[in-house]
Length: 40
Image 1 (cartoon, rainbow, N blue to C red):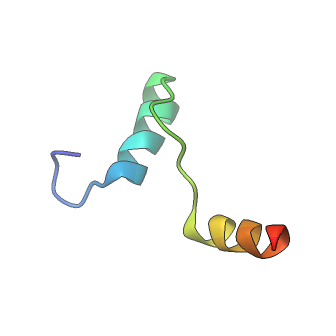
Image 2: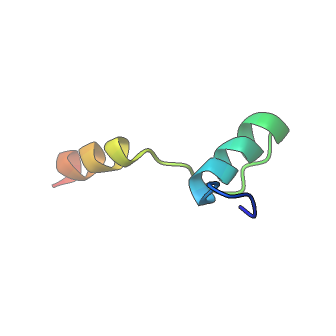
């Protein structure tokens, strides 16, 4: 996250895909929105 333009989501995706380490859960905004609609 110390690189310009890299946020928490991008860093989590890179850690999981490149290094196989899950440091968090990267949830796409659209998936979150749809899941909230289904849950309601």
